[in-house]
Image (cartoon, rainbow, N blue to C red; front, side, top):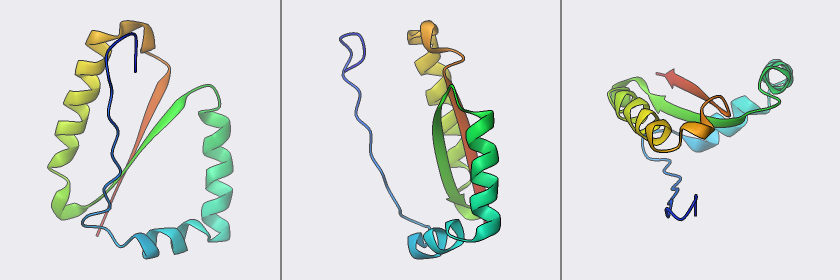
Length: 88
């Protein structure tokens, strides 16, 4: 619920190999990068998108949805960071 407006969030792992992503996230070099990103985004909520290259057309939909959200809730501008990873 966000100011009386219901919000539904879903996690979908279709199209990506989640075991591969988890394995890569455990690598030391990735953990070091995570620490750097934590410092950069320490005051923000991070939205993480992971897509394969063939699904990258959906990124535009994500950006439009985020834009629409900020139009509806301008007080949240600056509180979020979108980190989008495209691989494959």
